[in-house]
Length: 403
Figure 1 (tube, one colour):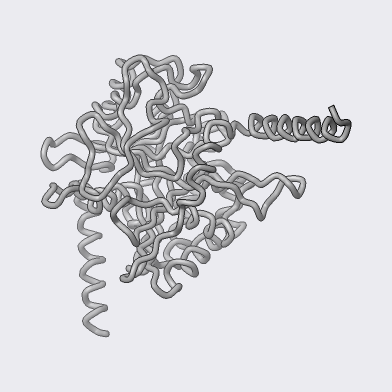
Figure 2 (cartoon, one colour):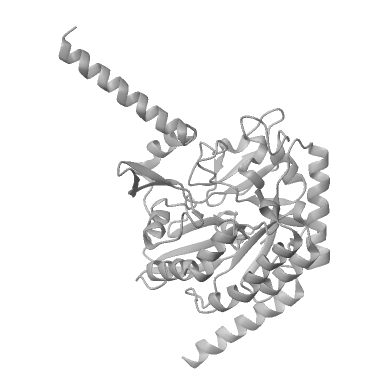
């Protein structure tokens, strides 16, 4: 073989090997194929009547995380009750609503005092509570018992969640601890329940917001999507694929709605100046919000087929981690986030920003996708919150009449 050709072939093999090592080191093999295949198709929505942007901040809220005792857990929640209302009420979306924070609270950390503290935030219409769970080596029977017991406690003891209008069943949204939804870790840790999706549907779960989980090895091949997945007996990670939500087509029996957040590469932020960082919609001390990241979230173009002009952005955090709270509260993280969102989507001509809870986002997806005449999901069952919502609506009506 020609020596020059030999060198070129060897060089190509070395580059290919290096790329594969990089891909494997960040578990990108699970999703990079989907990213490359769909990259040219993902175009931010445009519409003659304007673009509506629905923003949800989903918090894996774990005040007892990292071995905290009750004193530290209460102190963490107190930071939220002391600081978040003042910060949130300095901001408004296009409808005049404050930013809303969705607390996905872990069943295994249940503490009524903590949830009573969180409720003071929710009663001001700047927060809501859904279900989170860490478990390991579990069974379907025990999982079903755990979820039913916890959702009942949240509803009856604390006034969270809501009921299905037709069946009276308590329904909820879900995020899986350690990202291991549907026993998706290759080593089988941090779940144990194959066909977990079926258990979730059976216990009243209406939507899941676990993904994206990159760089975890639980990351699905399907990315930047709102879709329905169905559990299969004997199969793990059934949500690796699914049926995209389309206008006029809602869930079939046994299907669970998956609402994913943005996942892409940030080519403007490169490790060693060469390797692009992964944008996985996580907010933390190491990955603070920025206007640049907000633009990346828009570029992922998460929406519903047949409903142009609607963009869904769901990001996540572990909001009870101390250094993340330092960044959000004292470090200006919340201010940076909301200012960037409002500049890009509220104040930009042709765009409308909507601050949504996780439940609000589910209801909007249902409103856009469900067939005409389908029953609308029941609003929040807490009478106090309903009265507050009515008061806000009346105030908006008075404000419009004065203009």
